[in-house]
Length: 455
Image (cartoon, rainbow, N blue to C red; front, top):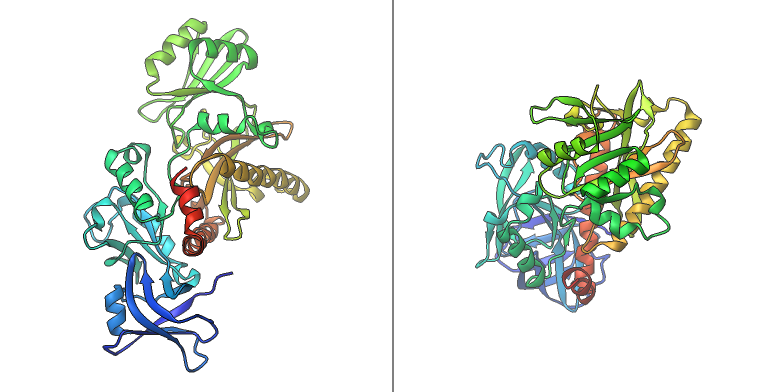
């Protein structure tokens, strides 16, 4: 495990840094913080002091912010690297200093609960906060219960928290990503939203995980008829959708077709279509953008309401995937899905399965599915992924099904008072992953550049 040290500033006009004597470094000629490098001498502490002590002049040259910091030290070929600066890249800034990211400000502030413990400097920033000529970012940190803007060098690692696909697909955002990755070789993790059909197609031929995948095909009239004939129960979903928006549950009962959906006013609706032609006409009137058809699964119920599971996984610095959170979403009355925006509610797995043995059996199956799918998604996609949010269903026979994998999972599950502590753990793992990426860039930049930039 990496070790971080507190930063101390001493009054002096010299450019010098003292590092803990337990670190055996060679002759240091330069010191780097983020993208900024300064020619400087670094020597071990005379005492067994476990701090990084630097002169005020050096801190100013490196643009070390006036914050309580613990950071890591990495050395290579006479250069000493301090960090990491973890850029949390997003959009939708409000211009209000007290609430700079609007409704997402509270969630993003939670990354600052563990930053000293992990040994990183998180900075929330957007495209407008970069000074390309100087190589600086004027981003936001959360300190003493308020947001504050600071100027730091370009970050070592970037964690992508763009709010939606529309923003992600903007040309200036795409150009920014390309420039930071190719010109500056900055690793960028969790880039891009997953598309349902793309993930399905990448996994369906993997024998270790295809048992978890409901059959999924692009929306076409013929496919709708074939799938309805084959299963009698379907979901029609936006391929690029999120939060349960635009989903239609379709089921045949005694030769009649029933459709459940949530209308534009937010009401749960149930309509009947006399035949497949009328169903197709109804859907063609309502669907916009690419849609998929997914095999319906008869889910187990909680108090007569369908329920599924949100599982959050994180990748540790050692490369191992772990389950950070398991929660259950129980559908609201008349809702086609258990999404919270459609009236669903969050429950813990203890609330759903009060019997210890049943809970143990169900949890084991869910965890096994989540960890196996995390490994195979990572294997089959481009880019670096460090967290995944899964929506799993369990049918009446106990079989686990993956309905969706999310590269930018929402945080609403952590609103449950018994699950809130796991958000802190998940954020801690994300920041630890950033430390590992910084170390990899320094020790093996060719590998990082080849695997994460040129693919």
